[in-house]
Image 1 (tube, helix red, strand yellow):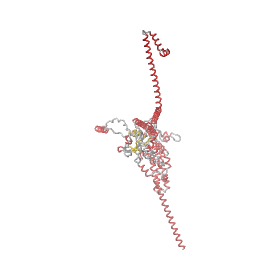
Image 2: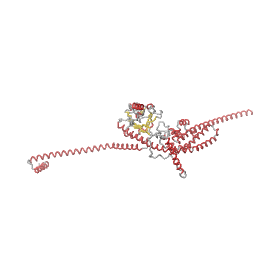
Image 3: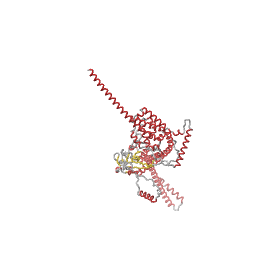
Image 4: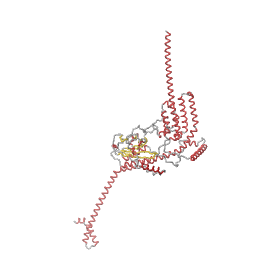
Length: 608
């Protein structure tokens, strides 16, 4: 018992007695009792706090374990999110730094958007004028919706088509397809509904101007309209969609963009008209510059290198970088980033559409930035080309008489060999056409550096000039397909990048080796009637205004077509003459044989 009391209450009683002795209370028994009760309460409190601490520690450990488990489970998703953010940033940098938004960039953008949205396919379409009613419509999804074909334009205008210029990996086959303008759903993305009252306000403004007799100040133009996003929630229920493959349930979205494009022949604004006094000052300045150039040329080295040497090469030195560039003349271009969920059991949400719109805005900014930079470079090159063109014109004019005399001498020698004035008409026509072609080619050789400079330009020199270059290249053996756009519906239509590249690959040297009679005999030359018909609609003055080199190419093509036609007539005549001679020889031989047989018969009768 003593051990029990010692183990259980001895310490508490001893502490209480010591406290009682120290306090010296009037009622020591009551004091000791109350003290022992407080010790019990304190012990219970400490035990409770210890239990709570243990419980909190256990809870904390459980939370740490749960967080660690959650972090481990979320690590792949977090890693994917970080990778996605890095890929997005890389694409943004690419769009902000690329010099030209090409097909590879558009394909990469489609792959990225598909990865972000997790959809069936993503593709970028460009609206452009229709190339004709001869092709079939293409799919709006790799295996999915295809817009019905109809060759009517919007509101009675010219028909348009959609061309797939970019696609994700699973939809690359779409890039060979087209959608010709129907009452199609994607074309709705660029239709802006006219607000009620707009026409009435315009009419009221016109009436006010007529009444007052003075034009009213124009109102501030409204902000650019927001193009509507096309969202088909169930493609199976949309009558304007049909399927390229087996019908599948899904949604279709087209997020449009419209940007101010400077990638067209008319992007450079025309020079402002100068007044009479300004024109005289400019002429005097040009004359002074020419005199200075002659002086510098005379002070050149032993070989006379000076201003003429500077005129050689592709073009003159570009205009200074700090020279102000006027705003270009833009045209509106329409594209759209489209995606579908065909065959997927998922809904398209606002976040998906927002992602497509965000990348459409970034693509628009990239297109406008790159085309602005290209326009500025083209403008400076165009300014520099003025001096190069003047030098080319001067050189061609200077050697014109010499070239004409040399061609006339060659023609006279050939005509004399063919019988002079008694030569057949087709021979005379052939020699006359060859003479004109030789004069044009000689001038073109003098302006060859100018032609090479034009071929290095991004913007085409004009439809007529491109037609002339395309025709000349066809005479050198280039196929229409090689000079066209491989991704277009009509692949034989002249495509400036292909024409420019072929021109830069030694067009003049190939023309020097070309021979009309050989081409006519081999059948490698284009049809002369078709060539002359195509060139008949070309404005010679406009081509000459673009460059004397291009005008000489046009003149050579016309002469070449006439030469081939004359060569074919000459060959046909010679073949006819040969056939007639062969028939005459055969008839003479037959007549001789018959006469010989009759003679032998008469000799036999005499012998009898």
